[in-house]
Image (cartoon, rainbow, N blue to C red; front, side, top):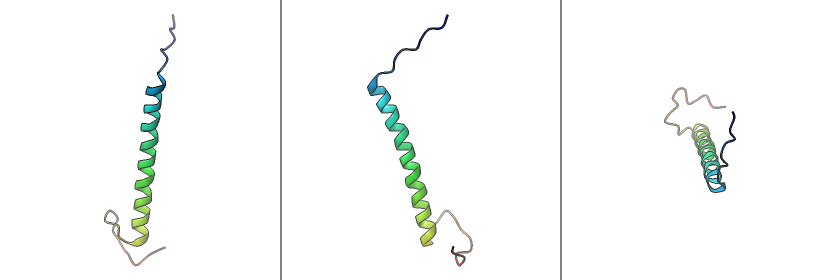
Length: 54
C-alpha cells in the first residue's frame, strides 16, 4: 500500500531553494563575465582571429 511522504521542513526547503538559486546566479554571472571578456577582446579561453569583431 502506498504511504505518503513525510513533509519537508520549511527551513530545509528554504535551504534547498537558496542553493538552487545560487547555482543559477553563479552560472549567469559566469556567462556574463565570458561575454564581457569576449566583447573587449580580453578572453583567455577563446582564441582565434581577434580582428573579426561583431
